[in-house]
Length: 234
Image (cartoon, rainbow, N blue to C red; front, side, top):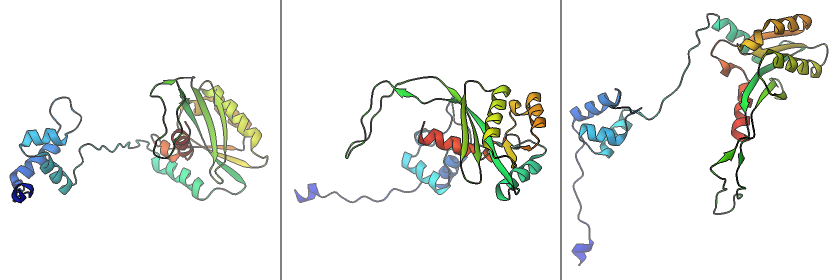
């Protein structure tokens, strides 16, 4: 009985030969068969004739993570360096007697309502919510973030075009104290460069617009506020 209950020790398995390791690494760097987006451990194990755990060890040893993809976007703006220096300079060394505002619009903003009330979190149980929801509608949030103190001016609009943008500029003009220059950081959206917007700027000479490089919305500080709003509130 003691011999039956005691598990016999086994010799550790041998690692895959170098040729198999090289084949696993080479296949991982190629496109997977069929319509799959990436190699999985089980698919690789079947293709190479080794165990799933061996595939996982090989991937860890070679720093391979086929399930992860890092997205990127290189700006093709010929004036990238000049615009970047201009925007970053406003953040690090703002002009005296002026206000630096990061301005942008967040379109298709919606707060989803659940079809049934959920239960709050309690000890030993997570909070609950229904999997389905009700769409009460969308709005466009226009926001101007003061990069010096973190305050912002916000206004919800039904549309997203140059006339709405001019109304929001008028709202900022009412709030900003007189005698201060206004440096506004914007992206390259067409509504920000509309002829009527330029005419409005001509009537308000204290305004100076600074445009971020093309495909560089991350350079606009108000995008951080939008991201926090989506993650923490909406």
